[in-house]
Length: 302
Image 1 (spheres, rainbow, N blue to C red):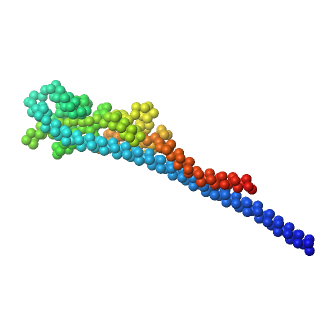
Image 2 (spheres, rainbow, N blue to C red):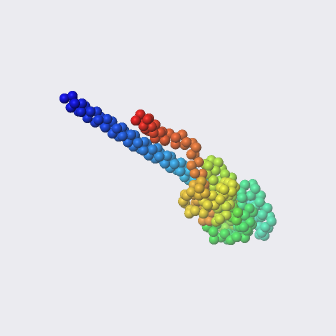
C-alpha cells in the first residue's frame, strides 16, 4: 500500500513540476507579446510625431506664400489709386499738354516724383501706350505697351499688375491722363519686390523665399550659397508641388501673384521644431520601456 501511495504521490509531484515550467513559459511569452505591442505603439507614436512635424513645415510654407501674395495684392491696391492721383497732378498734365516734348525736363520731373513717392519706377507713355520717358527701369524705354493687358485694363480704371524687369520684379500701376474724356497719355509708377520683403517673412515664419524670372533669381531672403542652391532646386521643380530638396528642406514653388513669367520658391528646414518635441518623443517610448523592465524582472525570477 505504501509503495502504491508513494508512486501516486510521485506522479502528482511530477505533474505539478511539469505544469510550473509550462506556466512560466506562457508567462514569458505573454510578456514578450506585451513588449512587442508596446514597441509597436511607441513606434506608431513616433511616426505620428514625424507627420505632425512635416505638417508644421508644410503649413509654414503655405503661410509664407499667402503672406507674400497678400503683400503683392496690397501693393497693387495701393498703387492704383496713387497713380490715379498723380495722373491728375498739374505737373504731369503740364508735361502732357506741352506742345514740344522736352525729354530732359520730363525725366527730371519723373525723378522728383519717384523720390517723393518712394517708388521704384516712374514713366510717361504716349496716348498709344509707348513709353516716352522712364526712370528706374531703363529696359522699358521706348517699349510699346499699348497691347499689354495692363494698359488696356487701365482704360476702364487705374490698373496694377506684377511686372518682370531685367533685374527685378515689381508691381506696376497705370492710369490714363485725360482731358475732356480724351486719353492724351498714360502715367505709370511701380514698386519693386525687394529682398527685405522676403527677409521679413523669413524672420517671422522661418521660411526662406526667392523670386525668379526664368532661371534668374531677382530677389531672395538669403544670400547663403547653400540656401541659394536649394532655392534654385525648389524653383526647378513642378509648380504647386511640395518636395524635399538638398536632403534637408521641404520646397515649394508657385507663380507670383498674376505673373506669367515670375515665380516664387520657398524652403522650410525639415522638422525645424524637432528639438521642442524631444520630450514628447521620449514619453512615447515609456510604455515600451516599462514593459521591458517588467519582462527583465520576470526573467530574473525564473
